[in-house]
Length: 306
Image 1 (cartoon, rainbow, N blue to C red):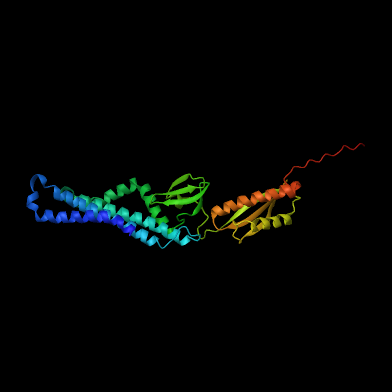
Image 2 (tube, one colour):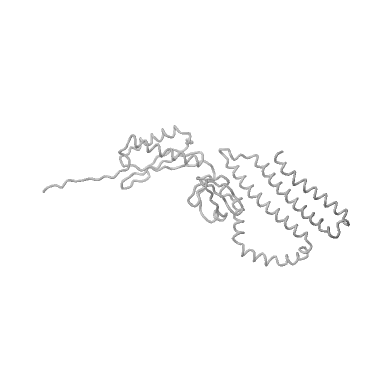
């Protein structure tokens, strides 16, 4: 019932205005002369009231529909998809309602109604002029609608944009807000995501694989590292028990590169797991195999006398 309370005030105001309009029509002779503008003002207020009611109704319908979906669940992929589509759809409907309301108010003025035919006759030329002058703004608006239905990302998706890692916080018709991991906000036009590549870590599911690179000397025992990785993962709740790999991915002039792949249920957890594994593996090498840490060898040879 709390949701419907928002509708009470605009509905009562609109009904009062409608009954006032009926009263003015029944007593039209009483409002001639200096007070003749009051019925027209009443008409404008009625249009405004109905516009207000429709805007509130779109918000109520959205809330009622979204009550079926919980964004706080672990597996919230469907919920984020529906939230994204409905938020954009509500903005589009609200925009149309406001435009129609403003149009009806303007038509209620007699001078504007009389020149209406001329305006519609020149609408083609005006549309071309407006299209050229505002093509970037229109392109951004269309991009926002494309994002709502194509959904290259959704609300709360983990993305990497412009070298920054964060979550999709807001999706509007003309711009998108990305909440960076350090609480900064990156605001980008909608067209950016249709024109430039970006990473979406939660496009099809929230779980993700993280990588950790360890650089060691050639003398490092890889089997011991694998056993230690098993022990580290078994003793942390960050790992989802799906992926666990340690591979030697490169052998450089002075060091060996080992890549560890581990999986987690979502991107923030994957970040914490990567940091945890890296720290514990370095501690293991420092304590048990200090000679296996990267080092530079210098070999000195004695000059042999002839």
